[in-house]
Amino acid sequence: PNLCGTFDQLRQRGSDPTEQYFNTDALCSPLGEFGNLGRNILRGPTQKRFDLSLSKTTRITENTSIELRADAFNLFNNVNFANPNSDLSETNDIGTITNTIGGPRVIQFGAKFKF
Image 1 (cartoon, one colour):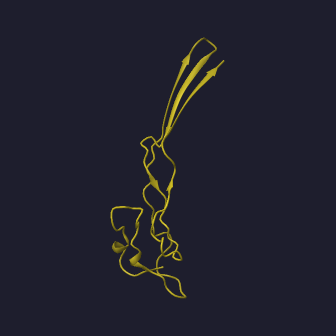
Image 2 (cartoon, rainbow, N blue to C red):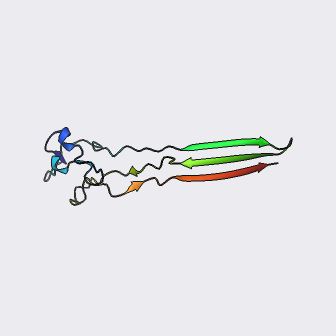
Image 3 (cartoon, rainbow, N blue to C red):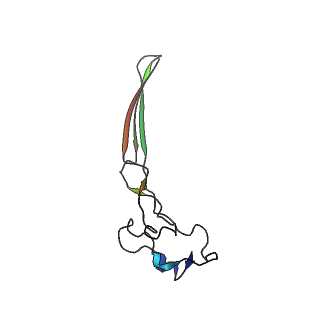
């Protein structure tokens, strides 16, 4: 695509990132030639993910022990949006985010008996 304005005009409009992540009015499709924009200029939203793992090993006898463990993935349950659609042939969806990546918070517990 060609940049038909400035990079400031390409930034997100509105407060909802899923509606229009970048301003499609700042882009135009050249006919029969390559555009003047470089590769990978459109960046997706920031990914926020916090994982935590806690474990405690306790000796029961000289030869036996037990390990208790708790793992949390995406502990703060942040929503991570996928990259916006940048396919110029789909004019209705260009610049919109239609899905998320990762997943919701997952917490798992485990115990291991060693002998």
